[in-house]
Length: 184
Image 1 (cartoon, helix red, strand yellow):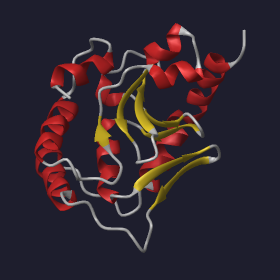
Image 2 (cartoon, rainbow, N blue to C red):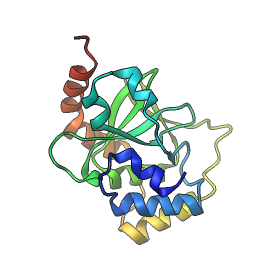
Image 3 (cartoon, rainbow, N blue to C red):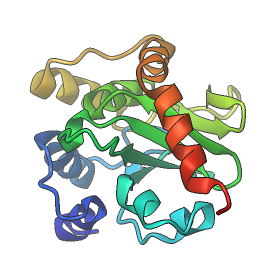
């Protein structure tokens, strides 16, 4: 993936430094968080949810959330926010969509937890196979990089971030999602 192809995920909007720097970090050290990787998104998964133009315009997938195919996307609430301030949602074609972070930096902090993000109909979860779990090869380097470049601390409990984000954006997202996925 090139920076240009990654940037197409955001409909021509300028990338914030969080994405530019995270892209550069991933190029050097790709194994820094379980199941996570910035991606070039082609638009297919969103079409399975809704054929409405507003749906694919306001949801901007940009990363894999886990090894099972779930994605992370920015949700443009229509409030004129910059990309880095838009809520982040986790979505799985088989299991629903849920707000996970209030913005890009909050998601970057969740990644320090270094455990797969699980998307289920009932909500989100974090999972590791205790017998086969190994920390990501570049997880410590990522945590240090995040602190050095963004003065952001790692999380001990990702739910502290997820709960705040869901409180702030969850209901509005659910109302919007319903309007985009109901039959007309």
